[in-house]
Image: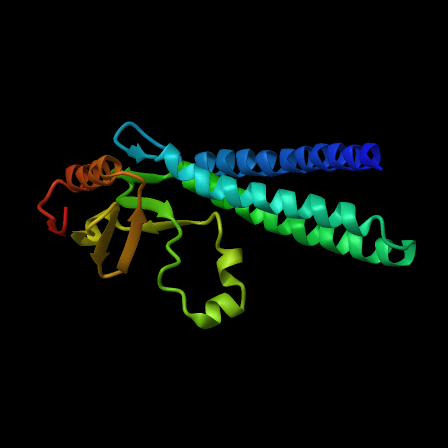
Length: 205
C-alpha cells in the first residue's frame, strides 16, 4: 500500500511538472509578441520589476498543482465519468494557465516610456473594474493586455505611501505598482524626463 501511494505521488509530481512546461512556453511566446508589437527605440526607457514576477508565477504554479491533482484524481473514477470530466477540467485549466501566463509576460514587460511615439505603455490596470466586470470574467480576458496612454496627456503623478504611483490626465488615472520604492521612483523620473516639461508630483514618499 505504501509503495502504491509513493508511485501515485511520484506520478502526480511528474504530471505537474509536465503541465508547468506549457505555462512557461505560453508566457515566453506572449512576451515575445509584446516585444515585437511594442518595439523599443533609442529614446524609450523600459522599467521592469523582476521581483513582481513571483506573484503570477505562484498563481500559475498553483493552477498547475490543482490541475494535476484534479485530472489525476478524476482519471481514477469510473470510465464514463473520466471521459467527460477529465477533458473538461483539462481545457478549463489550460485556459486559466494560458491567461495567467499572459499576465506573467505583461508583468515582465513592465512599463515602457516612449517619447518618440508620445506614449507610456503599462500592464492593464484593473483597479477601476466594477462588480459586473468580474461577474462577466472581463478580468480574465484582459490579463496580459497592455494599456497605452499619451505621454503628453499626463498632468500629474501621485505617489502613495508605499510602492505605487498613479498618473493622471484627460484619459483618467492609471495605477502602477512595484515591489520597491526605487523602481517606483525610477518610473517617475523616466516619465518626467521624457515629457520634457514640469509635471506636478505629489503624494507620500
